[in-house]
Amino acid sequence: MAKIFKVTLKRSMIACSQTQRETIRCLGLKKRHHSAEVLDNPANRGQILKVQHLIDVEVIKK
Image 1 (cartoon, rainbow, N blue to C red):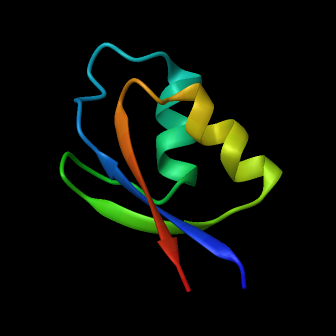
Image 2: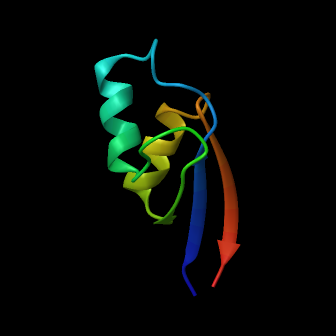
């Protein structure tokens, strides 16, 4: 069984760098309070760590 993360954008991207904006878009988030589900793999974990101050992460077991 693979773990799935539910990520929610909690903070605005106004003062973020361009690379952080691109990371948020790659995670599937578009605007504040928008949620997306991403698979647990090393690439996604690195993206989550890069913008951890902007998002909220929950673990969903499926």
